Amino acid sequence: MTPLLETRGLSKTFGGLKAVQKVDLHIGANRIVSVIGPNGAGKTTFFNCLSGIYRPDGGAILLDGQDITGRAPHQVCKLGLARTFQNIRLFPEMSVLENVLVAQFQHRSISPLPLLLRSKRFRAQEKQSRDEALGFLEFVGLAHLAEEMSGSLAYGLQRRLEIARALATQPRLLLLDEPAAGMNPQETTEMVQLISRLRDRGLAILLIEHHMKVVMTISDEILVLDHGVSIAHGAPEKVRNDPQVIKAYLGDEVPTGE
Ligand SMILES: Nc1ncnc2c1ncn2[C@@H]1O[C@H](COP(=O)(O)OP(=O)(O)O)[C@@H](O)[C@H]1O
Ligand SMILES: [Mg+2]
Image 1: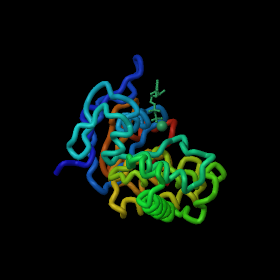
Image 2: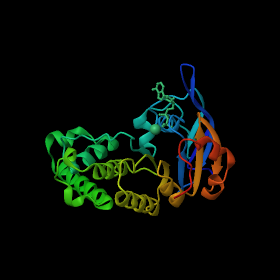
Image 3: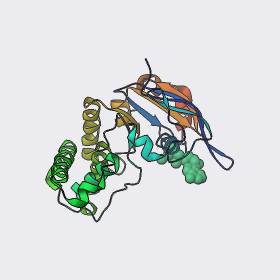
Image 4: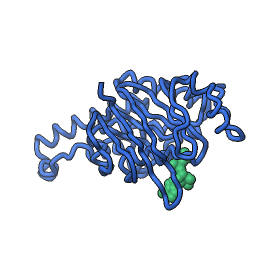
C-alpha cells in the first residue's frame, strides 16, 4: 500500500553543515510517528523540508505517492499536510475565532467577488465558515474563548489554537513541532489526550517532542535523528533499548520514558 508520506534519502545542508542526511521514512495513514534526537539533530529542519519551507538538496518527498519535493508551503498544505511551529505563530491582535477563519480562508481560495458584494452567497459562506471554525475550536477546547484576543491567551492555550488553525486547512497529516514545550504536567497530559483525539479523527501525526514520557506513551513508531542521520527507527520499546540511541543521548537526556 502507498504510504501517506514517504521520504527517500532526504537531505538538507546549510553551508558545510549536513543538517538532514539521507533520511528514509514511511508514515502510514492514521499513525503517530515521533521524531526525537538531541538539540541540533535536524528535527525542525526535517519538518521544514516536508512542509516546503526549505527546499531539500537531495532526495524526495512523496505524499500519497505524489512527488511534492520542492513545492511551496501553501501547495503542500493544499495537498493535505499541515504543521504547527516550535515558536508559536498566531496573529496576536486578532480574536481566537478570527485566527482560525484566516487559516481557513487562506486554504480555500474563496473567490473575493461575493465577499466584495456581500451577496447572499457570501453571507451563507460566512456562516458556514464560522460554524466550521467554531467546530475546530470546540475540538481543541477553546470555543468558549472564541472572542478573546489570541495574544491574551495563556501559552498552553495558544498552542491549542495553533492546532485548531492547522485543522482548519483539513490536513491528512499533521506535523507538530514540540506542542508540549513549556507546558506544566497537567497541560502536557491534556496535550497527549488532544493528540490521541486527532488520530481518532483520522489524521496521521508526525511529532517532535522532548518529553520522553509523551513520546513513549503516544507513538506507534519513533525515528531517532543524530547529527541529521537516522540512527534508529521502530516501535518505542525497540528504540528505547537501542544502544546507539542511549549513546546519542548520554549527557543530554536518556529516553527512559519516566
Ligand atoms: N536556516 C538555517 N541556517 C543555517 N543553519 C541552520 C538553519 N536551520 C537549522 N540550522 C542548523 O541545522 C542544525 C539542525 O537544526 P534543527 O533542525 O533546528 O535541529 P533540532 O530541531 O533537532 O534542534 C543545527 O546545527 C542548526 O544550527
Ligand atoms: Mg527544533
